[in-house]
Length: 202
Ligand code: ATP
Image (cartoon, rainbow, N blue to C red):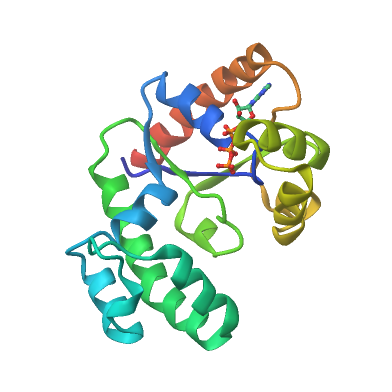
């Protein structure tokens, strides 16, 4: 597909839920979280570079990345965080774009939690933001992950604000209601994106 839609939203807003509704309508998905894991899987050049930089103690006995340790390192040292981002972000970006090109649905959705934060909105033709209130983000995520509401609230506070995200959105999908209401909005947006994708390739 050559028409790319970037789907984003805060933690627990319903990105996965919305993406699955588009997928049910025949649209291919490229998930940034999955690709972020692929680029550091055993045997990858990403993992090789990380092990060279931080030393073999960044690997678990089975050869996979010790994510908890890596998180500690980059939390404690801003330069290490920048180094890691400059290694991985281009890899993630290139892998997402090549997967999107290979997909053969009329348009393709890149599901990217930090679409605006990481500037990936510049790679897509259009952005769609899933919107709910911070209160709903907190209650739905705490329930889903069986974690405390305080823990989710601190993640919500670390992301771009609801207002900033909405200001940057081309389209907004309201996920405060029931799934049936979400389906109606997805149907309308899907028709709109089919038309936009068709007019781009002409
Ligand atoms: P994350 O950012 O953590 O990856 P997400 O944005 O992908 O989350 P989902 O996992 O799709 O969000 O949704 C968060 C939780 O809210 C899930 O348990 C999901 O089933 C539930 N949920 C999503 N939409 C609704 C809705 N309209 N009504 C009730 N529950 C919902």
